[in-house]
Image (tube, rainbow, N blue to C red; front, side, top):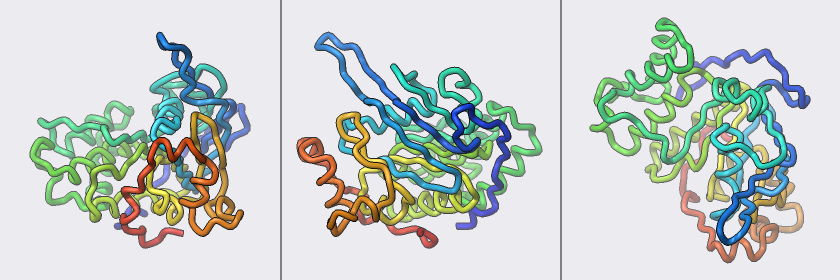
Length: 284
């Protein structure tokens, strides 16, 4: 897929944290929910960095804190404690700047049934302050890159699941953000569409973008990610290369994962549903 045509944005503002201006930095990130049964610690003091030109895979069993972490980074929820900077902006104090500099995709990111993919991109382009000429140029690039020509002018309500997911990604990246935050982007996708998504992530890395995504597929993370962050019980158990995780004599990342998270993962009965997903052609 020829996604190399998607030009990289320029984000000149640097972060007071010292993080790269188009990277991610989390320090002491904590989220606690108050419930009738007591405090629930979804995330506990998580620290990590993601630098431009890198893919970080966020791994963990269900309920580990992956989605909560990504929602904090995307400004959807505020942390209870700690700090995070995304693309040079603080996620609480400069949340509007963060939102303008990220593309945030979840498995539930929706499309509007009465709009076409082209109209979806135009809408979200305008919401991100783009002018008509830039929207048109970006739309043409994305339609070619995602091979959307056959359905770009069809109502989203008439699209297949895979076509809707391509449309969701298209509207997520229409403003050419330097940081991509994807939460379980392959859920429910067939092999061909999953390959398109993976190739897009690889091309984004090659363009110098910062990519963080969560997945249950340990095999995919081993093949695709430069580094992985393993979370269990809201705590960061490991952050480093897949090879470093396996350095203790574990033959696969899956074996290393279970050694790191222990009973937490076994109790959650983590599965590896995407292990058959195709490797992107240029994965490293």
